[in-house]
Image (cartoon, rainbow, N blue to C red; front, top):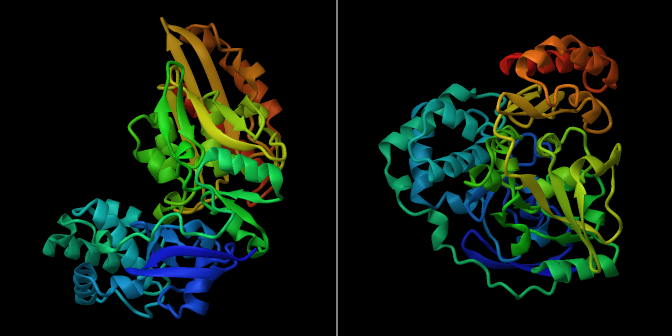
Length: 446
């Protein structure tokens, strides 16, 4: 399907006519000659292709052109003309924070993304800010030092973001029929055509067939980008990104912690809650939290709407309860009873780690009685593990009574959990699960 996509590129209005499923990375390098954006892994792992989209760092290998309608894109070629680049360039040179230079264009944009939000970061914050950008020769200490020098010696990050001077491309000029602006329009298109919903693309765009698929771009739908609250639930729009969710004042601590441990800034700025659930993966970090908190999904289609508990959504490896034409519109997380939580993610490295094993649990204690106990394990079997019958052993008990049956409770989980072998061995996964369960209980005095 050909389309005409209008957006701003380095301050200039640009109209792309072609495949809306094409990767931004490939178009920048192959068609527009902007080779400062480097091609590394094409899976969002190395960060070498990162650009700024609407002021946020995002890996261009995970961006389909059709999702850019009305957006403002800045590559290193555009950024290099700014005062902020000059300040970073001077700081990087002063401590020799460059060797081969392959990673540096995106590293500079990651530096900008960090300093624009936090003009005076400490070393830990700097390391977090560049955590999704791999350098294979220079070493990170000099880069961290350079960013610190730039933040101390130049005041330009205290001024408005340089991208504000770039006028955003006019909305409504697209001829692409697969860019939706309302939920109603989206559902009608899903009902009438064979097309795949797309929000963040951090999973879909890794597929080898990504450019052959027709996507329905959901990122501009207001109804799916809102976070609100009612008497019973906090309602998260399915197209809310991890970064937006982590920064929102209504987001509970357990979900905020999980969002901040998902990958690195360039992924969190693009990946969405709904996509993390809809991909059907047992390794999905936010889905684990929604499972442990007893959250529900608002699933809609052109002619119907239903509320489904998250625990009933997963039917097997990569299989979900979504029917053709249906879409996750909102995730409904309970407002109460989730403050006392335990969350751990075990991965190879902090940034971009696919969970080897993950654990989330909630223990609601009222008037010295356990009112609710909910434990969930991720990346252990083909689906997220949640054994409500076992957790019922502790519900209604005092802490002392729970301690007395602790061994039986742990034994029940030890028998029920049968991990599959993956990137790590099954016994390793089993040991982690039992250790985390023990720690959860001990931390609550059980």
